[in-house]
Length: 256
Image 1 (cartoon, rainbow, N blue to C red):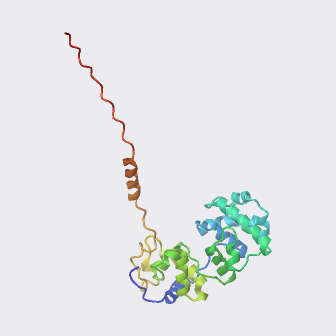
Image 2: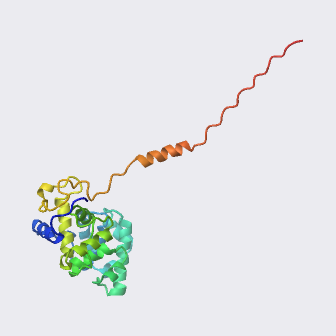
């Protein structure tokens, strides 16, 4: 990231918010418990895919007490259209049981209590804290936030935890929640991973990656060279085929 942004993250975020005034969490839910479940299911899965399965799931298990009594297999039949559905089913039943046993069936509003639940990491906890309770403990860093914060010059880090640390230092606490929703909206609608629409971006004049953004914030293509070299090395280590023994030719007997 060679160039420095021409404006502060706060100023740039303000322009992005003006471009996406409707930015919000796009996971359909009714209350903290449903939001928690939907966010757990959204790991490596699109919000659209999660929203397609939650109506049937929440119609049958609308709260922690009802879900805590279920077997994971019952949930599998309802969410098997998303990735890792078996593990997610176990996590959902496990977190529901822990909510009932330790929190009276309610979702806690503390980071330490949330991350102690099965399947809940810091990112999921901050979604719930920000959206359901209005008090996030940090900025949610998903693939869009990671890509955009690098392109915008707000961080040079690669790891989500370190990116989050840069963002919470750069932005006031009351903007942590809306910042993640705004960057996610912008990443889904304008600053695509491939062929970003820089012309349609409200901060193209301030963005250090403008019109050169495609290779910023994306994982480099995996090279096939090591695999090819490994194949060659393996081939070279194969034992040589044994040489065929030369046939012994008997000398003709000379009659004396």
